[in-house]
Image 1 (cartoon, rainbow, N blue to C red):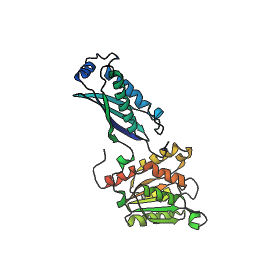
Image 2: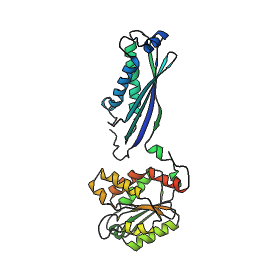
Image 3: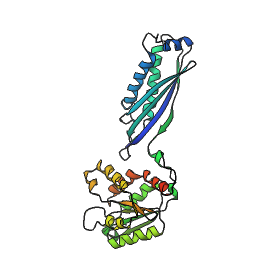
Image 4: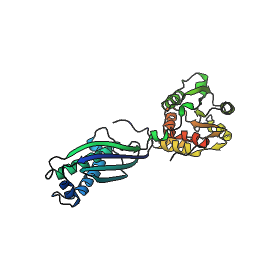
Length: 304
């Protein structure tokens, strides 16, 4: 299966439909009047559809097992057509489009099985996804390509040339995946004054997004949050809370990161861990959702 462990859980909704067409009004009447020998067609097929939604990952190899939080199955009669609508909700890392379509298909097949003794010309057609909601695409409305971004690596060893920078370059690649190009990339030592000076300079140059990586740990030389926090005009503690929560699901040491986030004037500043894994996991945790802060800062309508 596709690896989805890097994704963030969010509310996912999918609505799918299937069309079942009978050949005569007598079939419709038998369904409505509950005169079908095999039982109540709508209720039996609804039960089968509910089971199908929950069992999707058992029969479709690449589908992930996921918690189904809500399923609704309805039947609408339109002439000789019966429209089956299946709505599925989950709070998870991947969507429920296939679950909804599978539920619609099995609901229709169950109806076919129950009705075939009285109608030999039933047709099932047009199983399709009608709507979906949730996931990364829903939260990526801000034009990321318009942002001016700077990445600053804080590391004594990298600045001295004894170690190669991995974290900063990994962050730049991650940002590219979200349509953000890094126009400033610098490496500085773990010096309080140097870090503050760099942050002030980049903010004065009106960079929209400034990302520091390194120096968020507990050693004496880890001073990035200590240098950045006094400069922040408007703190956004939830950003790093979300990053630590995300990281804690992957390593128990995520709680030790002291990263901070907030605005220095009009520049959003983030402080990420110095390891490439910690830095990229922070990007996975907060992007593209974090881009909403630029909409809010501009006084634009909040995304529902």
